Length: 261
Image (tube, one colour):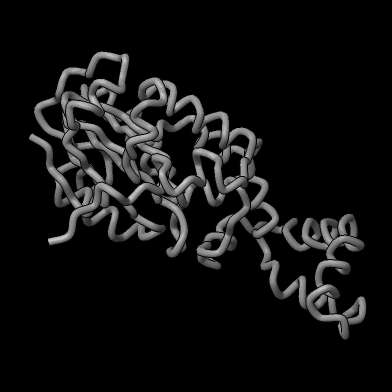
């Protein structure tokens, strides 16, 4: 049984998609729970996980041999992305002990954080990373990059003097933001974690991806090759629109398989 809860993509695999993967499908577990797009809402995640019987009242794994597939976009929009990530990491170990499994896929919003696209980051995300040294780090970062920052701000607002640029930059750089960017960068802890996640996974006869597989990507050489390319792109922090992690036809962004009633 596949139990779908608020997942943007949980796709039954077509014959052409199955043919695209050289790896044999893993035996289908008796129960699969797929959850997507949590977007920093820890309370919603806990509500969903308890309703699905995945966790107990103390938020420990209670799903037995269930396979949980989290289809990406844990980050952005809400303040508690890191809290959800840590909980899923903990559940991964607990599920294995019980004979279950936790699979987390990388979504386009994880990739955006890795590549420095922070348009949708909730201010609460930065606050989580702030500590007693954050003000010192922010000041040091400004001093080390002052010339480039001043040039960038004056290109947009020529009337700003050096003090005005500093004030504007400080207002746009809340405490914890420097640490957040370091953690999510390609070499940071969370950036490396994101790069370790698959973009596409096949469980039994079902294919899971955050976005989906467009026709060009089914001819790429199989799921292992797609996941390899996504991993390398994340490790390099690729920002080019043609990169597999940014391509509208790529597995993190493709929306062509969505149907609307």
